[in-house]
Length: 264
Image (cartoon, rainbow, N blue to C red; front, side, top):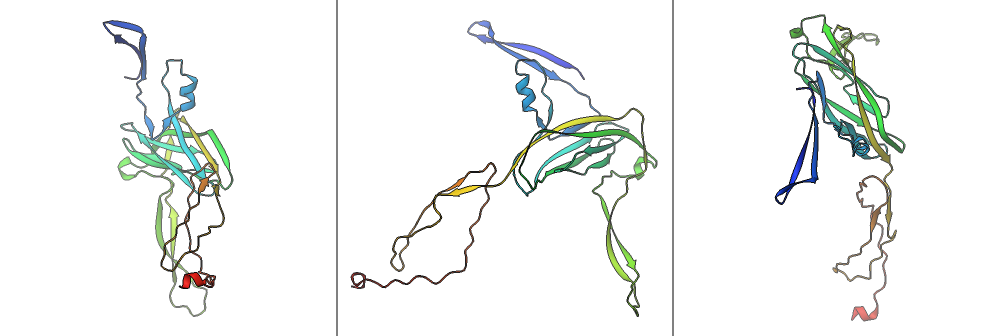
């Protein structure tokens, strides 16, 4: 049932119910025509309403810490819960966020995965960056059974004959062409438009580190003897530090004359 339900539970302390051990419950039942799955709770809203009995909305995507210049992505899904109607969705988002697919159709009872990608070439902080998803009910010009779910990421590969400009060419040149599948013809039903607000949060920063030394000095080592040296690497940045060691071309070892003591 689509309604808000509130209740209270009192804790039993010893043989009596205590007013101090009181648990307040609140819930909202929804019967939505469509849903977005994979979102997180709005933590700022929960903090702001810590003393208010209210259901916290799930409308947040948290990217966490992302390195500059590298893509970070999160996944969600949109579902059409209507039994007979086709819906159209379109994300209104600007750079550096990208929704894929951005526009699409969903037949009754169908779902579609959405990938949200963040890539920034400069350090940036996003706190509750607002994006909107516009959803409308549409009527297809062709029967539903003849039209598949569509989105702007769908492509079709064709081979086209390209007229050769070279003199004396006997056969046409064949070229591989990839085109986006056009959006099926449709009309938007009146007063069916809805908007969903989603908040994106992320911190984009450079990876930084510090070494306890820039020169590793091994103690004098005898032939076939194993010697170990250690140093410390600190991650001083705000994002995870990915690193790897590469072996450079070996230089000529420094030859030191043996002492008379070691020769004996």
